[in-house]
Amino acid sequence: MKPEIKKHLYDVNVSINSIFEYLGEKRDFSEYLNNKLLRRAIEREIEIMGEAINRALKQDPDLQIENARRIVDTRNWVIHGYDKVDDVIIWGIVVNHLPKLHQEIQRYLQD
Image (cartoon, rainbow, N blue to C red; front, side, top):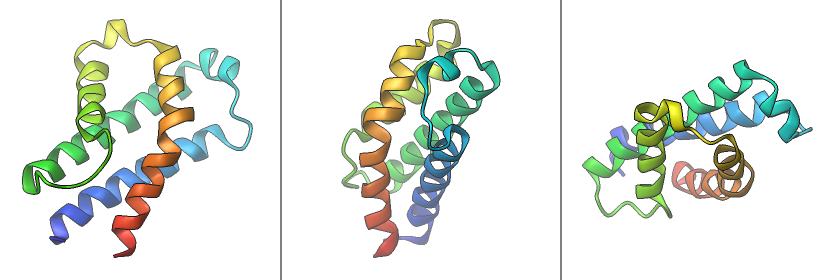
């Protein structure tokens, strides 16, 4: 794997770890809803992940990351549709999809 691609995947890993750190062990949706700073921080990390994956895909279109295109699309939605961001959808991504993405990225970084 090219070092540039690995760097982008490392950036994704850092963003995922940051989100997990922001939320702590107690992942509470009502706390997320009531904390604008937390919501914005997580949205920013999602933007970074989407951009990093987009760059990695441009360098290697065959990169096997499940839902890669959806991650990039989510980044675009958060940035360009900032006024339509749905907290329930973002929360679902964090709770349901980030753990699996984290495992995928970890595998690439270990190679």
